[in-house]
Amino acid sequence: MDEPLLRRENLLAAIKAIPSFDEAAAARARLHSDRLTKPPGSLGKLEEMAAQLAGMTGELWPDLSRRAVVVMAGDHGVCEEGISAFPQGVTLQMVLNFLNGGAAVNVLARAAGAEVVCVDVGVASPLAHAGLVSRKAVWGTANMTKGPAMSLAETLSALLTGVETAHELANKGVALFATGEMGIGNTTASAAIVSALTGLSPEDTVGRGTGISDEGLLRKRTVVEKALEVNSPDRNDPLDVLSKVGGAEIAGLTGVIIGAASRRCPIVIDGYISTAAALVAARLAPACMPYMIGSHVSQEHGHPALLRELGLSPLLTLDMRLGEGTGAVLCFHLLDAALALMGQMATFDSAGVSGGKE
Image (cartoon, rainbow, N blue to C red; front, side, top):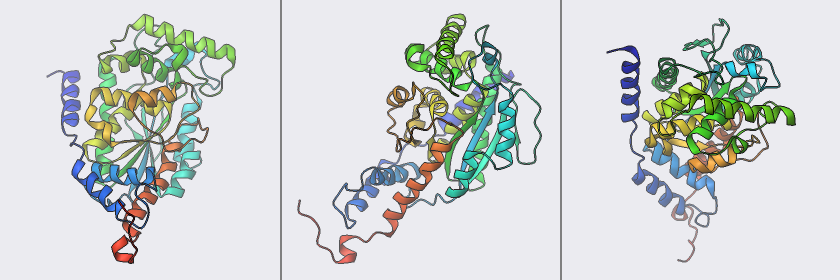
């Protein structure tokens, strides 16, 4: 069996391993929530989160104390087209910042008791650090305005790196995941993916990314339009889309989502780039969708429409657009709160409080 075919078989095995959402466990969680000393539904999304977590894990009070933010890193050849306010070398510099604990996601992860796992799946420069997970599938993608960003073999390699990373962490006891990324140029690739898979025009999917000017925004839209025209990605083939106009770190995150779902682990989806990866994961493996939790609404232009496409209801609106996993890791606190309420609040019976009337 040739290598791409073997990798595809390994991906299909991970997809087939995703368990069904446990509706009975979710129902038990809702019933317990209704018995707590409060009007039914009065804690809103916190109650629904608790039920969703029960359905994902099959447990009423799952232990999610071991958690990780998986930051996939990769470079993009499309940066040659001048679509970012920052040079491509910032990808490497920021990966080192993550590894040294100095980035925003590191600070927020420490506050949430989460580990930051940084994976080099496609950085264009050599990288060496004791804390780095080095799984380079490609040395930066090709310029997608001139042809496919990656080969199918490279795409599958990056995807399986994500699956394997999730499995390795789950084997170590990690029970809750958040998606993070680093890659100058990756909002351009994400916009191209979203346009290719949904039919939305680049005008609806392309945003300002790192903060480009009006002129830069128009150029970025033109670049996405050209990439779609040159590559003609097949809307009905997510792997074709991912390889032609995607990125290694986006493919890696797609794999993390599938891998986490296959181990019944909740995965909190960060901003625009992470949600583009979630869209690819959902198209490849619809069974992983119940394991996704939308974290926040990014300021990136196309994010609200993308969330609607996936049916994700984000928990936060904080006008953020940093990426890295920052919005996702903030939501760990809300998940902790939902589970604490389930496990620690008194019921009407235990507290001797009269329940409400039907």
